[in-house]
Image (tube, rainbow, N blue to C red; front, side, top):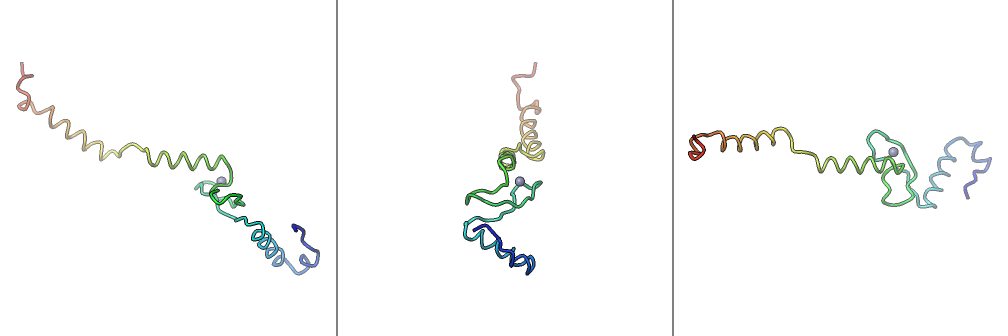
Length: 100
Ligand SMILES: [Zn+2]
């Protein structure tokens, strides 16, 4: 296994590609595209759950996921909360005890 006979090379690239596909099927490996957006490399997946070409890419994807889930609320949501608190504290008539 793993060797290509000379006869296959004479016939062109197609037998070589078939051979590589056959090798992948026999070895039960899969060619995948790296999940990191800026990487876009093809790699041979050794494990079923492998989604990135390298540990570095894997870590970057995990960080990206973390920041997407733990991201601070948007400016719109923040301003809404601020308006509510302002309405309560600014209205002088609502707090008579503090006046003078
Ligand atoms: Zn990658």
